Amino acid sequence: MADLETRIAQGRGDLPADLVLRGGRVLDLITGDLLDGDVAICGDTIVGTCDDYDAARIVDVSGLILAPGFIDTHLHVESSLVTPLEFDRCVTPRGVTTAICDPHEIANVIGADGIRYFQRASELTMMDLRVQLSSCVPSTHMETAGAELSAGDLAALMGHPSGIGLAEFMNYPGVIHRDPQAMAKLALFEGGHIDGHCPLLSGRDLNAYIAAGIRTEHEATSAAEAREKLQKGMRVLIREGSVSKDLHALQPLLTERTAPYMCLCTDDRNPLDIGEHGHLDYMIRELIRLGTPPLAAYRAASLSAAEAFGLKDRGLIAPGKRADIVAIGSLEDCDARMVLAGGIEVTDAAFAARGALDPVGRLSVKAPAVTARSFRNGGNREETPVIGIREGQILTDHLTETIAIEDGDKCPDPARDLVRIAVVERHGRNGNIATGFVRGFGLKAGAIASTVCHDHHNIACVGIDYGDMATAANRLAEIEGGFVVVRDGVVLAELALPVAGLMSLEPFETVRDGLRDLRAAATGLGVTLEEPFLQLAFLALPVIPSLKITDRGLVDVMRFEIIG
Image (tube, rainbow, N blue to C red):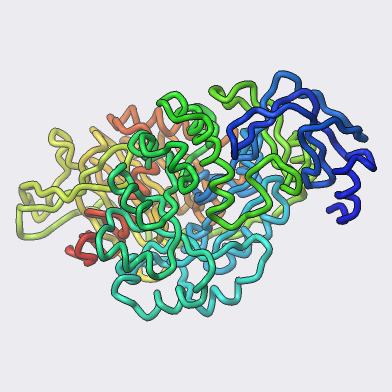
């Protein structure tokens, strides 16, 4: 960072700036105007706008609009299926210059070492990777994770420069009913930033949750839900991930009036969706296409996000702000032509100069070997709870179906789209296996399985044929985790994710292509979901209504208890 006097001298024009962007127009997110004049940069800081400057290096951006760098306000890098350095290479060229992540996926597998891994990564990435401390490891008492983090464990991780506060507090019943462990974590961050996660919460329960000092919410799935949360002072983060797609539902609420309290996030978005559609750039394009004023869309993508998380040094192209800048062809297209992250142009050479990061969490899949018999589903009642998928949401329905018992087993029934679902504990703690039924995959044969299984990340598997389910689950142990598609005992497609069973060691382009092959293989089994693997992962998350499954059984989330 250049010293104080140098920044002042370059801003006044007494010294040439380090870098000048010339010929473009600056999008001012305060007035909505497009401003003429140079943008002068000293080190990592903007020192001048709306004037003429000399510089050691001048870059011609004629015909382009300069917007502040985009801020993803909530995501799990692990769900991009690549390492933090590859995630950086995947999305920073699209204009994402700050990402606020919660590493609770890897923390649920290997504990504090996973958070430290992300903290080290933040020291290398071109983007500013902000690492929140994970509040819910595990997310509830109704699952078996690979680790547990107490308030004391979190205290030992505080103080890293990447930190902002406490990540999404998913155990909202623990907050409302004052669970001692939840209270200890909230007290540790009292007066600081705490992220929220409270799907469908309203009324007095919502009041109680917010009264704990929780400031943001990314789980609103309807405009009415989001409006109530805005009215009670929460910052609403519009989410558009690979499975959770809330943009269309919340877009009517985003106006120039509400934009100061609304932000954008992706939560869970994989490289295939990023490659085919985009990241925050896609969200901006889609919002504008749907009628959102460009000022509101770009404000939510940067300035509002910076304000929500206390990042006072960014969100505007103005003197004194961090030089995070996206040069685009038009506001409607949001087509990044050049990106600066902290004053450094985002190029292949810049990525190559970052340094390396050793992987962690190898050999983390310690599941018991399973057989076809492991997936039988007994019971003495034909009335059976069924998880109902809502495509495009992680909310599920709690359905009830009559399923005949034959030879002590309730068999899958593809004609009624009743598919076996199972969760196999894979951390080597107890070997639990739970089974149930799910509707919504459209599966006609075979099986698909994954170690990306929120948030405990055990093995989740769905199938018609028990033998194929066993083949898929056992194959995951052999490849250190990932995704597998099987039919008639043959592996049709797979993607290895050896970093904690969550992330690949390959470039994001390789992962993108592998996901394309997996999607095609799943479609060949009859699957109708656009993103079956992450949809499967969320069926095991017991903090999202209504019916879910963990290694300990089916979970009625509304009652917050295991029902079988």
